[in-house]
Length: 126
Image (cartoon, rainbow, N blue to C red):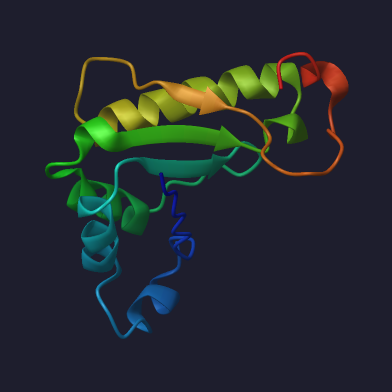
């Protein structure tokens, strides 16, 4: 068995950064997505930003890959319980619009790093 992680650069929200790329980021992401068994879309709980470019990339990679895509809400220990509920709901709503689906998108939540939890409210959950 083999496991390979491909960590693409973050999707930029600024028009200036996007225009300075010398390649089609969406098509590169699709090339990797088409060859992957699982695609993780990572979102930070403390700065949930789904830029137009990120929406475009999701639209591009979805073709033939919908069943492989998972949404992960990372750094969830950086917010309070109340904020996490709001961010979680907002992400589900946003993904439902992007995926144009009446079904709720499953969102996996955690804090995937080696440091101590910032907010100990989630100690048992994570």
